[in-house]
Length: 369
Image: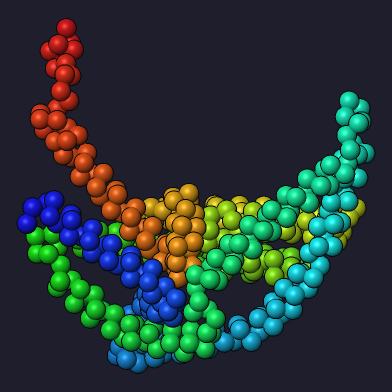
């Protein structure tokens, strides 16, 4: 089969796969979540096997441990988070109004003389419009994710189906990998295996490492803000840690929200306001210099801009399901593009007919002369 026919076949397969994702996106969430859970827990199950357990007992032990930890955290944290979320939603208009008043007052007191004719109400209206547009955009994004992930409505199906799917996939993981390996085209099996290994290293290095980074940062932010006495500190800290999965999003949002709440709550005392600001500065320093290099590393090959684009694009197309598959899809595309670029740099299309010698370059004798 010629290269052109092979490319056509694989493009058709990719198109059919994307079409199936789009058509069945409303029912895929429990299955995608179960697959992601099995992928994350497979190294733990392999570790239990190395301790002498058989695969069945290792799978049951890993899933039971995960379910116990999940429900333990659910019972401990979710009621408090729900209470703080309701309180934050009720107090948000008051916080925004207070911040507007402080900004307008400060600007009117400290404006230069040549701006004495400036009307503070214009600034207040601008802030109100900006906040309104931001809230509208966030609301549309949440609504899009909700509409695109209709399986979220049926939480019972998610809770019941996901562990079952994860169990079967985790139990048969190694056999499935071996089976799929047997389907590879024999002429390209080594190349496909290398690409699959690179994709797996990229996804596992980022996802598993970033989950640990998010948990550590979430706990640090939540405890620090709660000890500071900041209103809704637990909610703000945990959400900031969770959103750290998206580069710079968690820290930026947490910094803005916590500083805004601190200004309204503690004004005019600068110490707690500075501490709320400093907590996120310390968190970003620890993340960038300690957590990211040690837990995620630099070999994942996922540029922050490319990752943010993939999350937004897949989220808008497939809802919450799209956000689950955005990272592996972004990693796969990145690995394939790098492979294609490497092939191009070693091809006659790049090197020319000379097979590596740049056409038109002077030889050694001419350059010496």
